[in-house]
Image (cartoon, rainbow, N blue to C red; front, side, top):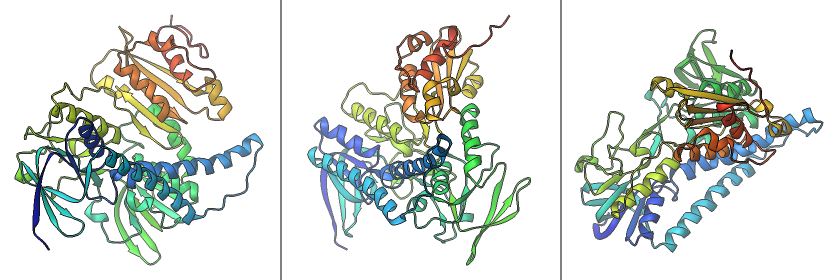
Length: 475
């Protein structure tokens, strides 16, 4: 191995994901010399290479398959689909390749250098990069952005060195379509990937330790989704724990503990989806003053500035929620701070979206959070059964829910369950961020017939009657 070369830059960004590359681009746009250290196969991070994007490509396919079945109710019948797994895999990979290639082109246009390798702090002013060709290079910097992301959490009891026991990355590879798939964890990753495999033909069993799917999400929103998944999954076991997995030639034997659950079941594949952990190991934090909290996230202030005031932390390494769009916003804040501009992460509405079918999305304060905080709120719910557009789609199980300050009518939170909820939530985010009141939303003309009207009618319900729903007045 050759010696280590040394050079200087204004800003070094460690990580090329949805926090890292926007930070690098924003810095370059402001005239800084930027080096982005990326040890992944391509820029874009987990989200683009092994997460958000490929999973959504497959979820689109799953939705299409499901619609071919549902259309029989409308008098349109299709033959059972023939699945070419190689071609499906190629489609997913093409989407990823096109987008990562686009990021590379944008980096080149901005003169952002992408250095392929693993970055580690030598001290608070330099990063040593172990490059993919085996050499090392030291980058001395004025400022650094830590955007190292997160990885799937796999407890040691499940880490059995068997490729049939998968994390989300393995599940997205689509090695085959297992006859029986066990999903450990009823969070958004497990439900999204479970939905994909169920549509492709797998018998999917979900095991969740808590008493409900999507722990932490509003139960009003989860209820329609759980009902639909109960029909498409082979089984959903709540308040159930996977005690042990035992690989054998015939499959993976799972020992389950829970009321009314068969204690031993055999599956062809197992997906472990119980959360993610921040990538804080091996990056040389001990050579700096950077501090970790009790969950392993780097401590920082509202400008994303760490205990080393010229080093910033953004994205999953900087704390919950671990969402790509949160990372991108933090990137902007950090670079604004470096540039001496007023930048602060003061957003109060970070949207969360679960891309199942139906989708679930929410932002701002949830009903449970309002209760815990002792807020005096008014909650309105508009059922999609009263939506003309939902009726035309044959998807009336949805609901739009809004949470208002009871005295002022200010929009504090929005929750939506139904097809396209992830797109619709943007209006909710804008309403919460801008401090809109119920009247603002209710009196803004929404196109008819659209699902967006459900927000307008939910807002109408705050002070009067929604046009397409009648609630008897309390005496």
